[in-house]
Amino acid sequence: MPDSKNIVITGASSGIGATLAEQLGAAGHRVALAARRQAELHAIADRSGAGALVVPTDVTRRADVERLRDRAIEAFGHVDVWVNNAGRGITRPVMELTDEELDLMMTVNVKSALYGMQAIAPHFIARGRGQIVNVSSVLSRVPFATFRSAYNAAKAALNALTANARVDLAREHPGIQVTLVLPGLVRTDFQRNALGGSPAIPAATESQSVEEAVAAIVQAIEHPVAEIYTNPRHASVVQNYFQDVGAFERAAATRG
Image (cartoon, rainbow, N blue to C red; front, side):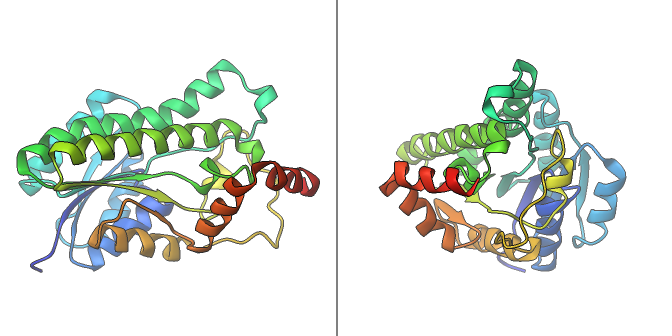
């Protein structure tokens, strides 16, 4: 297809990354899938269209991320979009966090994306175009789930890096797009895989199917924007939070 793109996706062995690969492949794009679990990557690749590339990668290692870039360029000729989707949660309130837990959350959720941005940016600059997509969380903006503490903090740091990179690149390289994606609660295995497990989520908590969340990301790839909430309602929730932080947080504390 004339508008097909070559797209690298980290954290592609399950959840949002896996479904994103499948939806992009179905739309005619070529995808390079990165994660540590090789068997799962091959299973996803089989459902992600012709030419899907599997590159086992530990995104917490800069050399692995650079090798991922090189393998994708070698296989596809060039890369159009790089999606930093790898991440992991934690269940630990702020006052109980250890150094090791905070370091892990920053490494998995922030440094991995930094490695990806720094690895692919020179390629995009040389081509004069490209898109970086960083997957964050609405929890980076609103303290809905305080037990995620260090995860929320890491995603807030990712937001800041993304915005600063977007402004920096726009000065001299306006053909490079940088998109921040903020999902809410998505029905994947993320909760189960969080460090320390996850408390029970109240049945009335609003959530999205992974297919709904991913459809929003696909739209942002095909029609780039600065940032999106995969659940559009969350934009007004975040706006309400910042209009009166104290009132919002008092209400949140009362609900527990």
